[in-house]
Image (cartoon, rainbow, N blue to C red; front, side):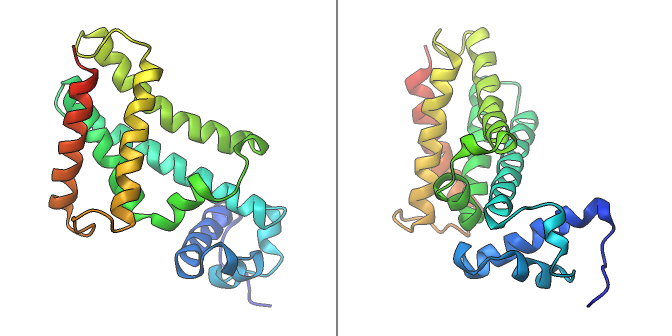
Length: 201
């Protein structure tokens, strides 16, 4: 058996990195605990320290995707000018870029046939990503930039709008080069500005 190359503390992350790589290369059908172990360079038994089966591995991978999405939204919003509309546009852009550049992971997160209710950690990670958007909009409502409506209701409009845009770009159904950041940014800004116009006073 090949000797373990990872300390216990980072074995889980190493397995998740290997799993995401295999997900991109072969989809969920080609992903197994044995294949992940081989890709990570650890023994076949190693993944079972963290994942009871393939389904548990997929849920952990989706959870990591939602955590990455939350971080991207918050980082983009924090870096944007102190303006509710600009923060929302930045957050929308981050959402679309994450979805378009991580198509397989996004498909797993939102359409992987998983019941989020089965895994509290996955459910909380997904909720946290949404809440990062809610906070941006709640601040905009408080500042009088957006309509005085339930921020969660407005965040759902923003979330579905950006998600739909990302799926259209990823599917190649729009005349935009998904690999061109300037084209993607221009399209996101256009859609986001129209969305914001719809929820602004």
